[in-house]
Image 1: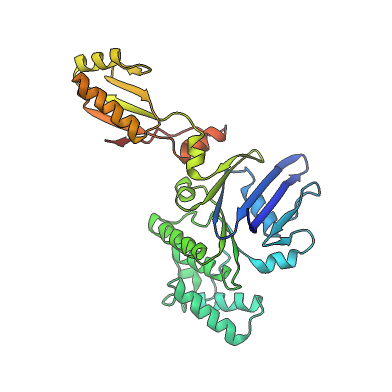
Image 2: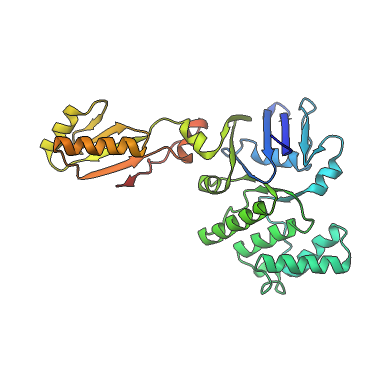
Length: 319
């Protein structure tokens, strides 16, 4: 990997006897979205707090580098390179959106003119010009979250930590935030994202790691993780009992449901497998009334890798 934005070797954190992170290794390429998934209490927020210098790792941890800077020996350089949008908004509701932006510019020691220019550019970029003169307490959740992220970008960070940035947002606001994150990464930034929304990770992340009980249970692209999980299948449903019996006798490795007149056939869901099955049905003169395909998704990956979770019903696509 060339010039990774974030590397962590053997990241550890305990509080007394409670081990939160137990030797976590991370490597995040620059200019990508990296998503850290895991159930509540898995250690996601703790990892973000350590990597963003808010808390210190245990002494037994290995080297951690953020933006090329050693976290242990040069935390100030790390802080200068990053921005953090936490689970809970940093917006001050008692002042306007513009005043929040100018306050952040002051904290970054920008000159008055530079601070006003930066605030104006970001307010326009995040479609906040109309709301900028109103108290932030009057903002909707989506507008407040956009302001929160705009404030994070005042210092022009190249690495952005997003800890569950869309929690509580409605679907439209969530999709708007996704587009903003994509644009930031297209512009060369690196995003480290934690989320409870598996669809969000699937949509945005170039690389995903699943954290469970303080350890990385698996990592890879979304497609690579999905291939780890068995359980893909095709389901045929019949209304004609004769056709059902004929198919059940002729097909191998099927699971029968005589009450529902349905057959479940293990399948990876590839076009070749589906064509072969349909060609066989045609050649045998058997007509199924309904064919559905289920392939493992990130929900299946999450439930398989985090032992305390209970899966939802399989998602199927009617063909």
